[in-house]
Figure 1: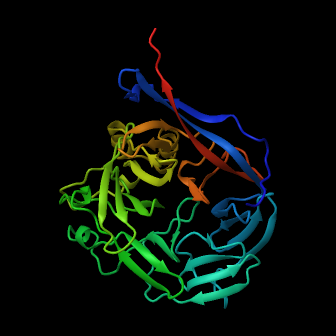
Figure 2: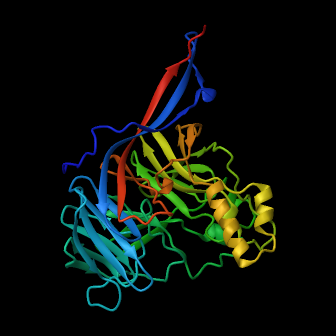
Figure 3: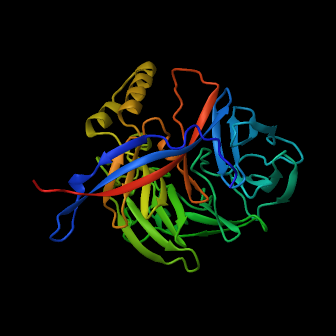
Length: 395
């Protein structure tokens, strides 16, 4: 492993939440309470003035890929774990070795190159920006949405990459039949340019309830672990477990208990208000670490704030209202056991909750930028989940 630049050997506990009220019996010897904590172990500070978006991290080669997404330009930057920017280049636009537009975040392949999934196909570049290979896509349509931020991207599995399905021109997403037709994930093959859409909503999913939902409310959050696919379909607080090989059978479903989670349950009316994408609770990211699921989620508005959202307001009043709601309903982290019980739930102060990225068995997160102060640097942290069982002693 590439040596890291340690600010200190071990940071103090960043978060800690006592979950004694969720204790589990331990026979005649008393009860167990569980203490959950995140501990910062390593850090990387990168000197950069701008609005960086981290795409990928490789602890083995000590490489970080990030970009500056502007309206008419996208600069790719390669940095090391000392925080030094080693290269900067652009492959956007009408250039012979350009990717067109991004379909996903950049993905480091090894200690020499990275993969881009773009409109022009699968492009492999070395860390100086030289094109190494190109494979056109077998099928292509402009995606409905693309998430370009840390924690959202392709996950490698036996030479292929697992990724979300970004929509089909053959499906009427405003019909009930759409929930029977959709394939939610794709296997991508960068060697051939082919994709294999697979996984449909299970029969017990809320999206098979005969109700209507707002567009992309099902956008999957997924992770690969234990030779299984763990996926949450957007707003639905259930972890579905699938096999990684055909026929991709559903192995189990795990309902998740989340604190004050308020999500849209569907409507019998076909005209679903698009404002729900801002007010409904939603699962944003999921990872499996140390035998536990770590889930980033948006809790959703209260009924009173939903009503306030729909009130007639001026443009300025809307901006101020949204700003208040962003502070009131911050993204949270839940630590969930394999039965779906939440044993820890907290706001990750100072970190971007949905930026969780697992590489080489390590959990990395990005520091929350200070919006009130212009910074010419940003931080990345390796974070370790600590779960300690505490025995309650009777007086």
